[in-house]
Length: 295
Length: 64
Image (cartoon, rainbow over all chains, first blue to last red; front, side, top):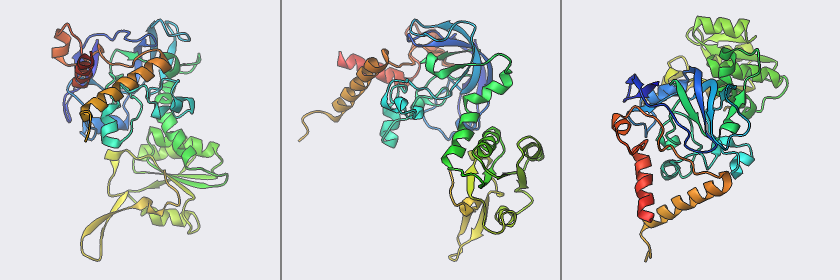
């Protein structure tokens, strides 16, 4: 099959690799239908994530069709159209039982790497370095999905592939960001970045009862979508001083909740300002200092 | 005075982790045998997906 392989910083290549096979009873093999590019793929590409190796297949936000199941897979069957969670959970450990799937302590075969570096271990993630398990990613024709009954969700009839794929990563990321912000009915919420995650955070903020959501970006198309589709007020950070504008829009008090949905590589002078400190050293001040609570 | 080499403690920890995986999920999580773009692994009969997997493998042999 064909797969997009990491070959070093800034060097991705489409290569011919062997097809994946069932390695454990609870595995399934999927034909990948859609695999989207996440901002986190840029971290790999730009060399911010250690323990990547030449030849690693990247990609972790995807949906596809089940083509093979292991003997331990009970709920899925061949032909099912499913969207798959980026992060792997075994469903049996204490963390999974507490619904803290991202902390699963069984799904990372290289747990000893992050344990040495961070003192604890995260769950395995598709296509996201060997510290996160070293699993082959979804930018490929086929992918092996461990613990398939738990990570694969059958997509209802009538829901297009393009809509379902975001349930893999962008939707839960934005959704959870808004949840963690503890939004109360009537709150004014400011959201930095109107990418996939920002869009989902806006929807969740409104569902939680936010009276107003202010989306901050600089791309004209995104700002238009934020206004027309998400129903948010917008700020173009390349044209206004965000702090001043936010205070002006909120009667001087600033937003109640602030959510950062900006990818690491997207940070620019619109979001951080360079200032001269008293000692003369240049310092960067992040505009979201204004926040009363941030995620 | 340490009775055992610290590496030995790490090996026991790894084995206990695998034992826990087997007890809780009925399988031992692995990536050994999955595809990659590494030509050496594609040509070799003995498939290992990474040098980390190889390290795990060596560790297992050491324990036998």
